[in-house]
Amino acid sequence: ELDDIHWMTAHVEHVLSFLSYASSNLDSACASLGEIERQEWTRKLSEAWTSAMRLADAVVALAGPSCAWEHLALRGDVLASGCELLGARLGALNQLHVPRATEPVAFDVSAMDLEEEDADEDKLASLAEAAYAEALARNGEGCVSTGGN
Image (cartoon, rainbow, N blue to C red; front, side, top):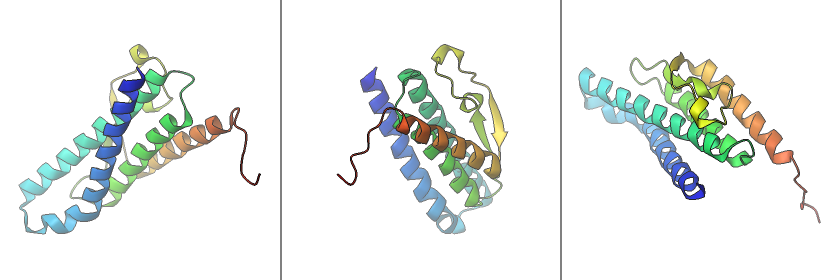
């Protein structure tokens, strides 16, 4: 199970790197493409983001109720990358499909609702903020500071 979580986390991080690069550079790179090709790139980016979101949710679910703060922060990173992707204003992309499991965190894989809802940039920002707050709260549980010693 730990190897699965490690592999899934690494995969999500690679997809996030790709999405960040694409968000920053695709607009200028696609300037010479036609509308159909641009729409296809936008669709693929949206699918890649949704895949990363599902994997991040699965990481949290597999880790269970005692998941580490890093797993929760990974979810926040994916949600924040969705904001970045929508903020790049790539064509008609103004919403992403968010698996409903992002609200609230589902720790039981069998209970994860695989239906999706549309989320705009504000909704994604709100979900990312909640994920980071949960990760921050989890990081403080039982931690002893070694700074300043």
